[in-house]
Amino acid sequence: MSFYTYTAGNPLAGLHVTRSTQRLFQPNTSVLYIPPVSRTHAPPVYGSQTFNKNSFVAVTAKKKNILIGLAVAGALFFFGILAATVWYFISTKNCIPCGTSSGCVSPSQWCDGIPQCQNGEDEDCFHFARSDFVLYANHIDYGWKPVCLDNWSTKDAKQVCRKMGFPRKTYSNYGSASANTIKDTDFLILNETIKKRNIHHKLTISKICESGSVVTLRCIACGIRQPFPNATGRIVGGNPALEGEFPWQVSLQVRGKHLCGGSIITPNWVVTAAHCGERQVKSPPSLRKPFCRISSPVHWRVMVGHLYLREGAALTVHKIDKFIKHELFNSETKDFDVALMKLISPLEFSETINPICLPNHRQVFSSGTYSWVSGWGDTKEGGKISEVLRKVAMPLIDTQICRNHYYSELFPRMICAGFHEGGFDACQGDSGGPLAVNQNSLWWLVGTTSWGYGCGRAGKPGVYTKMSLMADWIYLQMKKQR
Image (tube, rainbow, N blue to C red; front, side):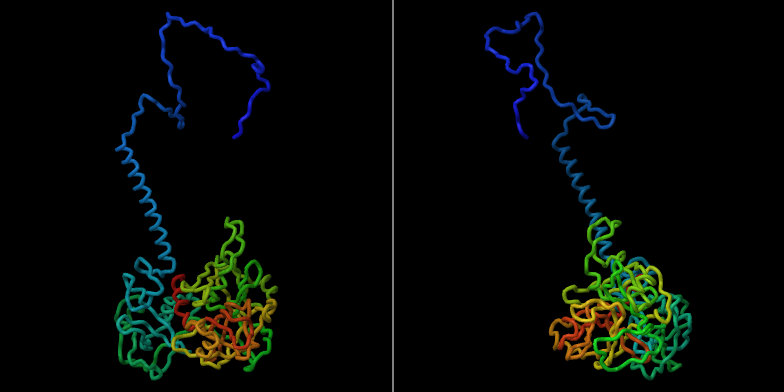
């Protein structure tokens, strides 16, 4: 604040004042003297209520302390409720609903042999084994055992697929395999005398399987494509793919630009790399915040069934409902580098749009087996993305040999593919795309493109997320979101 002397327009300015000892006013001794009254600011008015000073009562110190205590208690109660609410949402964010009973269970506790749900739904578990999809169920006392074909029906098969998170419409068929090829000596047999709807509760342990066969189950017709002449040797620099050659391949785009690849596994689900959602982009005005991670579903579009990026962007692009990263994903080491995208509307399968199979338990992909990498990534290190889908074939590398290349940077959830001399590799823009192997006349998602040093460098093969160790997590997420 600045101070100034006011003179302009003042009628007293320039007036000469002299000091005088004469009183200006003479006191009137006949008038009773009234002492001055102190002037204070009027109290505030709240609505139509005015302050009445006659009714004002001073609050004692004891009452003040009580009021303060009540205020503090109220604040603590409010923040307690807030903290409990936040904790609830955090603790249940990744848990799987029990189903018939209330509550939900963490994925790490699902199928661990210890019932957490009131009705034990978290232990009603199934999985597939080998390349012929032998069905196993988890028994609370005996662990994982193969399911005998005795008393089995299509109705039972469909219920199992539904429990595993597959849509009803994708059911393919069930078959059988010789029990002699199974190392287990105990079986789970469907007991029709048990009057329960839950098929898992009707399975009883037995050492005898009268049919001599175990159940094989296909919940979706995956890994199928029309025949193509595939070279088994190296493809120098990679070649353009043919239409329908990799029908599970998708392009994941943000605002019309290709960023990552992905693989179709069901009409509703696409598998990709978790690190694809690590970037930050400018938010659309509707979100009212400047930046957000592109793991937010609103940013992504999924292009399916096309070889060319520009062609696909104008034809078949799908929105996503959820982007689910593995809860143990490490952005620095790229361990657990896997994520799922759930589409808002299901895909219609065709010769150019079809799912790839997830690996099953006890399924082995030997080192030296040729695998196929596909994508629209850079055609060379530091280059530009390809407008057409390209492919390259490379052998799987023994884990110990790959560990010699990368030392402690390689984790058990990783698998390598490439040549020691380099020259053939995935590159930027291929992340999240498939590493596919043909086995038993089906195509399997052995890995998803994750990381590497440069592109095609000697002694630095490409590193992929090992999908045989991620399949259970994927099924749990599908079950959670069914």
